[in-house]
Length: 254
Image (tube, rainbow, N blue to C red; front, side, top):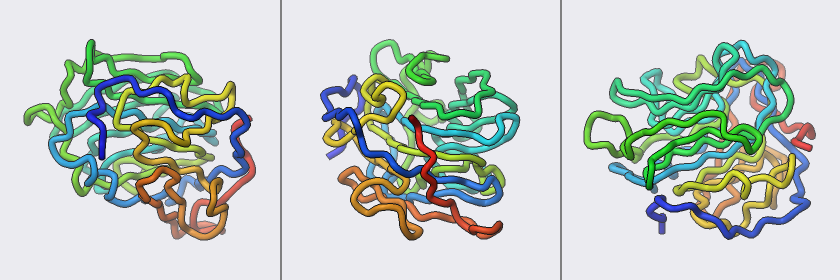
């Protein structure tokens, strides 16, 4: 059962020394991971809760227009929840029905980084973006999703995409690892073990956790398994280039 998503969720089973061997390399041409519509449909239409997304990434170049994560279909019409890199800036945007707000942070680092984007509908309603555990931007979203139609997200049928945003024309070039989404506000400190990903096993409100080849299934095939209890497995997509789809690599946050 999904939580209301309005409170700080803590108390997960955090384990130093999480085994993290693989990340996924995206070629910047047409690679992405499609995790289906199960998560969006579970959250449902008129979703009025908070959301937190955590991911680790290493980009080939920062002066690009590349997608990291989105809740929404890659149809070129925007999406409810988008995280992307554009012109040396990281951007966290809610964009729906011609209304949008965004948090923007200057960015030129091509090493491994940990990003957490939080849409917060509780209390002061300050949505925030954290980079490597430090707040790098916030916005008062007035407790509402800016869709111009009552302030709630319509997520039923919307896809979960890793490594692209907006459309297939904006794929990511670089490596992504340990992507997680929660239907609550999560303390970024609970998602890190120093400079490495923390073990999220047993954390409250965890709705999806894609480990990019780590976990019980290992690094093989085109399926990126959801290591939460919700089975929102992803499929590697791509057609061009030497390797055709995102590739498993042993380059990971350290």
